Image 1 (spheres, rainbow, N blue to C red):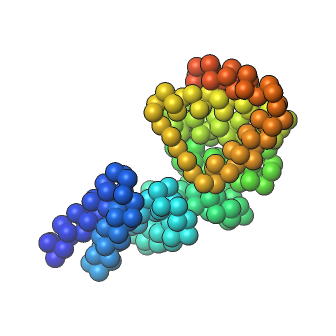
Image 2 (image 1 turned 30 degrees about the vertical axis):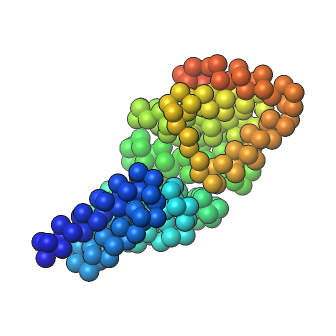
Length: 251
């Protein structure tokens, strides 16, 4: 039994590391083998953790949203049966993220409101809940509501000190601003995020988010036509702190 536990841990860890190193399919295969062992051992805690790891790999690296949802929902059920409220909240974050990516706005919004209730003042959980609610509004085309929610998410994210999470909220406000008839502000904010990511050597691509950026920021660029490059350059010249201030400023 002890040898099986060590083997399952080795498979799970190797799968996560392999995926992070860029070999997504090999990482997925190792993780799924580890999940099989944890399931056979009936170790629900370790199984739920491995399913969480697989869920994030599938949505971000493999682009397999339905399989990711299945993994997170299995983890959510296991955490509930274990009475692990914190683990249940973590799994619910994953479920909400995948539902947004799938465009299942009705269910995503309902569960994101549940997530907000679970937050109980925890800024990271609040940040995620507000972000998913903003995504739902943006997908529906309710850009006024989306901007309000992205601002709330941004304010919750700031104390966490995670600049990447913060930058996604600035992008969100940019998209909402574009839909609210302010293409200049949209391009300045989006340009500031692009410059930040370049400075960090980061390139992030998530299919549903990229589609929203094209829908809103792409429309702002088309609206400004010949002025777009100059406005984008103004955004790139902003410090990121100034971009955050601009995103939080009520127009």
